[in-house]
Length: 209
Image (cartoon, rainbow, N blue to C red; front, side):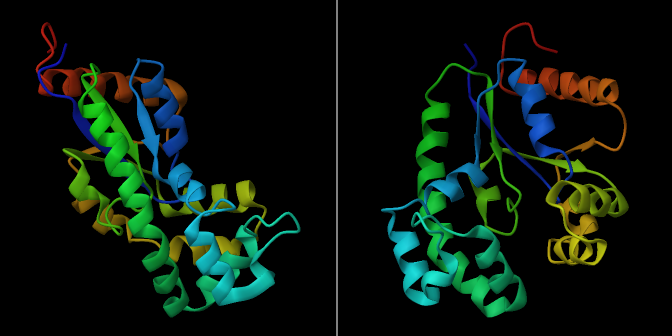
């Protein structure tokens, strides 16, 4: 058993490959929690955050079954920074509360380290919840191309999405560790394996180096 369960915050710009990296660590037996999944939980039907959002924007942000229409809400908040700030004031404290609970459970567990996957690790203040910060990095041109293809949006909208995020240079400056995900799967697997050894050693796992 590790002497301390480390929490590694994993972040990166849109379409940088955070999910791919997470799966690679998971194959090594490492547990994780995804802030995006938690963000979806807090706006499910019956949750207070969804009620507040519906009260502010009305039926235009709800689907027929009462669930949040994410596309409609995204269009509103991307067009108006003050609306994005309001939305964050409603959702971020609730997301953080649930993440704190889950990370505490990881720290009580037997894994040498665990991951917090969060695209807004720095912007949301969630970096304060982790011991190390791992940035998944790709060139912006790759982000734009992947975003346009994955989300079925045009290049201009993909560029706007990337531009709305923390600049790549600023994100890298705050990293403790970096994975370059612009290459092939074999190169990615090698980088994950090297970090796995490093994190196990930092956690004090006997035999790690």
